[in-house]
Length: 160
Image 1 (cartoon, rainbow, N blue to C red):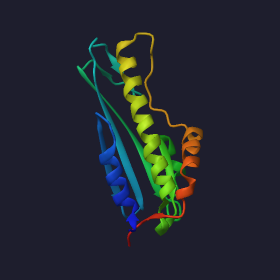
Image 2: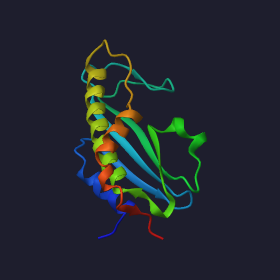
Image 3: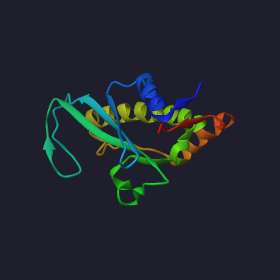
């Protein structure tokens, strides 16, 4: 059975073990997918927290948002916006992604989300931790991708 990339992404998001929120949007004009990752955590110490723009908050619930861009490398150049995303990952036009890429993506995304939840709690509860940010390691992702290379022939296509 042929599976499309949009369906694969939607199903993969549903299967994530994550206490936050993941929103998937498809921009048909730019041919991009945006995965917005929202973390929520209790600020038990009610410490004042500053975001990257210098805005201060001492709210009891902290919200942290980051995003992943998945883009069509045949029609979109993310060069001007890569710093706005945790990671920008290309797909191959109508051919989309290989199944290997899709499975590796969700396996590594789960690791990123787990580490992010843990790191955010450390940031809020440990005075020694001064900064919180999500981390995406291209080398760790590539290592995981190598484990799925045998599935590389099946494609997760982009519907017309």
